[in-house]
Length: 281
Image (cartoon, helix red, strand yellow):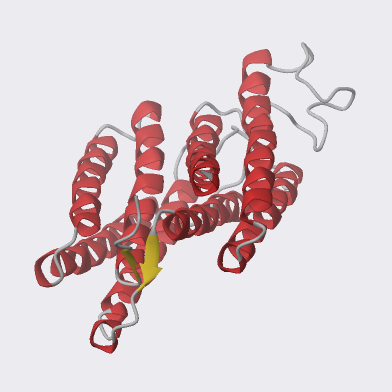
């Protein structure tokens, strides 16, 4: 029963971490990044949006900030439920501390007027927290560590997948930081050529896809198949949004896809380290 409560708590935490990426993307594509122009207050006089600024943009940015409180609650609950398990405690602490780090980084992002480097850092930290939450969920969900020496050498290709998947995310933040969706019209941009960085991003996507395909063929597993399916959908969205001039809706879906892509890549890595226990329900 207790493991069930812990699993639901960790799964809720994971869902909130992924939702934060989506709401952050909504802030960006709607130009609401400075809807709350100060931090920690929304405006100079109030913690909530008022009529002194664009009310819609303020509500969107404020809603994204409020999600942090839901994340804190889920993380603290997960930490409390996982406290007696030493194998989970560090992962649960990472979630709590990482969320507070996100709050601080969010404040820096506002104070730097949405500099693309801090915006990118905000997203990449979310991805690390998604990985941590996925690991936490896997350890709860009736999995045990694979200790077979014959299997350990296979982790090289899994680690290679994660390296290129993360580099793909980093390149994606550079593309976004060089493109038109800055989060606010006055936000600074990277001085990179958008065409060049987009093609470099595509190259990393192709390498990651090739590694995923190799894993699916050489070491068949459901997680790799899921990753390949998500990457195909992401690739189609990426091609369409590029040809249509980066419309807001498709950019938002692409950000959602990036969270799902990273989650699937991380679960593929975990599948080389953990296996479902025979006694698990």
